[in-house]
Image (cartoon, rainbow, N blue to C red):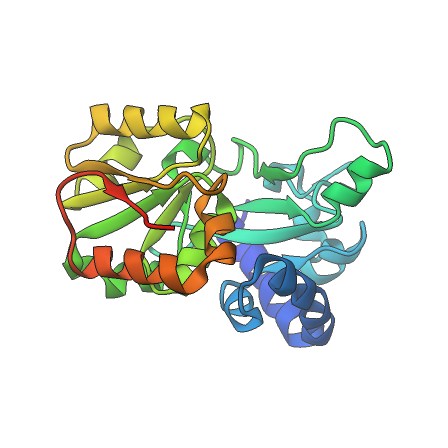
Length: 254
C-alpha cells in the first residue's frame, strides 16, 4: 500500500493545479471568518471538500482504500470539511485534521451529534505523536529555543502566520514522542484555553517536561479569540516573549 504522504500529496498537487479557483473561492470564507490571510491558508495546502465525489475525482481510486480513512463504502468522511494536512518534521503528510465549516448552521437546524473537528483515525496516524504546526516557522526560529503550545488548530495557524513558532496538540493524550520534542527547547510556553481541559494540559506538561510555563489571559476562551479582539496588542507581546523569553509564567495584558 502506498504511503498516506504519496496518495494525499498527489491529490493536493492535482487539485491545486486543476481546481485552484474553486478552492480560493471557498477559502476566502475561511479567511474572513478566522481572520487568517488567504495566502497563508494556501501555503499550508488547506482545502474545502464540497461533495462526496470530490476527493475521489482528484485522488483517483487509490484514495478509496479505507485504510486512508478518507472513504468507507464510497462515503467520504470529510464532505463539507476544511482539511488541513498534518506533517511530520520531515514535511511528510501523516494525516489530516478537519473543521466543519457549516457546523454552527447545521446545529441551529437541529442536527445532533455533530463533530466540529475530527482527525484521521489511528490506522493513519497516532495523533498523540503528532501536532499541527508550520515547519518553516519552527525551523526559522529554532535557535531562539522557544516554542508555544496551544489547544486549538486555528490558535496554532493564527500564531504561526505571525511568525510565532507554535504547535497545536491533536487531542488530550500526550506521548513520550511529544515530550522528547519539547525537551529540545529551553522555553515551552503553553497558551492554555480558559477551561478545565486547558489548565489540565498545562499541569500535565509541567510535570512531564522541564522549562514549561503558562501564558495566561482572562479576556476570552482562547488565544485565537483574543487575537481577533486585540491583534496588535497581543501579537506584540508574544513576539516580544519569543525574542526575549523569561523563565516563568507570563500574563498577557489585554
